[in-house]
Amino acid sequence: MNTALWIAQAALAFLFGVAGFMKAFQPISKLATQMGWPGEMPALTRFIAWAEIVGAVGMILPIALNILPWLTPLAAIGFVIIQVLAIALHLRRGERSVLPFNLVLLALSLFVAIGRFELF
Image 1 (cartoon, rainbow, N blue to C red):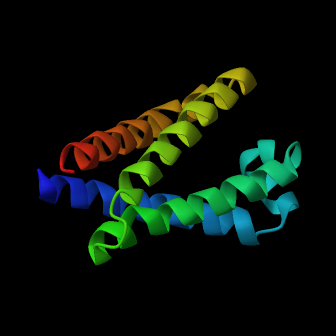
Image 2: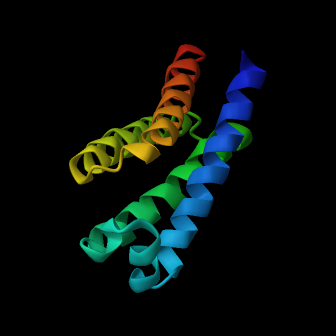
């Protein structure tokens, strides 16, 4: 179980870290051509970017360093919240093609949140 959790954590840290850095440092105009919604919500885009970056760090470092390891499942809960809201946004915008990816990220985030809370 611990190995599966580490694999899920690494995948989430990588995926959310890359997405966060992209949203944090690319111009909003470029993001808007790629995703659409950042053009309508630039401040929210930057907020989500930093939440994803902090969450990616929280997915690995606290438990790896054994410093406040309870932060790792909290980071996973943050990712759950991001995905629930992302699914709602994509449904509202009629972007159903991205929902399978959001559902996979949601499932992985739930797995880590539940698995890491159970191990404490």
